[in-house]
Length: 54
Image 1 (cartoon, rainbow, N blue to C red):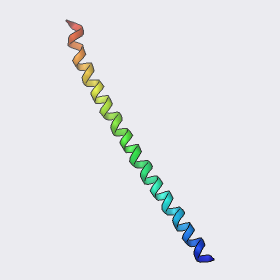
Image 2 (cartoon, helix red, strand yellow):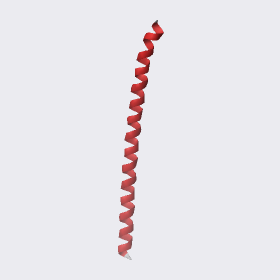
Image 3 (cartoon, rainbow, N blue to C red):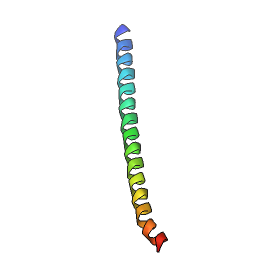
Image 4 (tube, rainbow, N blue to C red):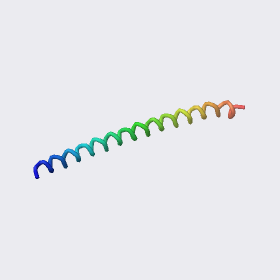
């Protein structure tokens, strides 16, 4: 019985590790998307300034 509990604890630790790895991957991806959107919107603002001045 003791071996079964050790195996269960190993599975729980592995699942938590995988969950944290997936969470950090999605967090990194969302930060990257935010940076891309900000740079695109900044580029659009730069393009609109000369149009407003005309």
